[in-house]
Image (tube, rainbow, N blue to C red; front, side, top):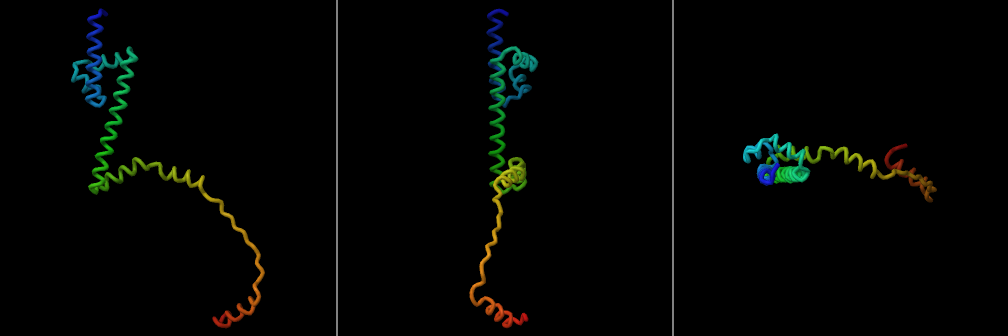
Length: 139
């Protein structure tokens, strides 16, 4: 490929990367926006490690941005009293909570020990017990 062809390919790759960034990593929409075939994009990913790294970075950032936007939106709905969203969020974020609590609980359980210490009856004990029995009609 000549210098002109390499320059054009580099320009197309940059255009595709910008389009991927603008469209949250969606290849089909980015390809339509740039006029580049999706198959060309995938070929570039296989042939060019720098291009592949850039695409992976864009996809990662896009995923995190989408996730953050969804969580922010869900939190707003929860603040406005949408219990369905609250229950779904709890299900997503706390789905493994019982398992985790069990793990922590089994590690944190205190040892239960009982010690019985014999203590002699205090002076007058028998007399006091007899008086209580008589008072309450237990004999």
